[in-house]
Length: 398
Picture 1 (spheres, rainbow, N blue to C red):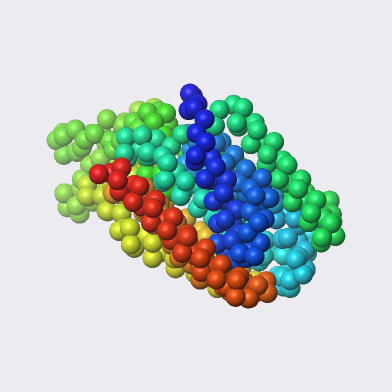
Picture 2: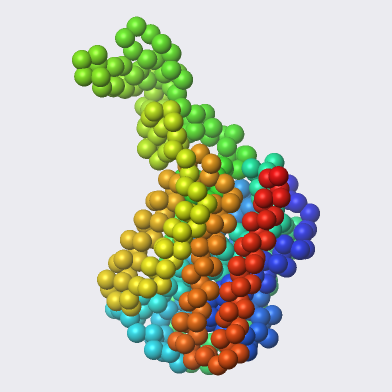
């Protein structure tokens, strides 16, 4: 694919927003340590930029962004700073259920991975794209921002960030991973990578209402177009190789597969109808309103942050993630789903993160006046960014 020319503004914006959303907006680092922001950019900023480039160069969508964000969170919290294994990381009491043999603190590991996937990667990328890119619904598309030199420079930049933060963590924490812990971290990160790319074929419309033009042209006939119906006596013959007939006594319809390709066509049709691409009555349900999407995002993040550090909390967290993914998939297939809905999800995340920054600040012991003021300022700044992004999209639509 052709690579767009280098675009400096969105790259710098994303490189700054990633550490801001990951640490300052969540309350992990206070206003007193704002000077540390440039030192966090080689880690969070480079990772977000690189993931954006990989996803947009391969024509994939936000499920891949979230999946690669989870892989990044696993790698960072595992091999880089070991925070999901060290129960005393940062001098805090990270008590919770532990998986034997590898001493994996599964509750805090889950929390770190989810927060990195959402706030370190997905939220800053969504905000930056909303500010600078013209999505497909406005006659454009989300594409890469870097050329070849910029891409490989970002890879090197991220490597330097891993080395910088990893070295500092080892000197401060003096916690060294065992071989089983290192192997588990690599396997878990690899699993997220595989899921990100393998699952994108089915899940890309979760946030991108339409797949990329390249994949759309290849799959439109077999996956998105409902079978054409030809009238015949007593039955309906579809062009996809199967026959639909109606029992006049019961009113029930049955489908018979015909031809070598009929089974595949029928299976694809039934699958597409089940997940919402094709609808039974010819009246596809509408996507929820932007305000409902924002409310749902807020509730999900709120519930996740209120989970107790216990095995039931872990089980509920996993169930919540699966339910959220399934619901989001169905909503995104509905008529009217747009990039404004994606921003509503971002707005819901920031709505929860802003007040919870005060809770996190209390946990880390940063409760002085300057720090508390900083949490409020960061929350307002996050809300302003969402407002500007919504306005930019509205201006494009107009």
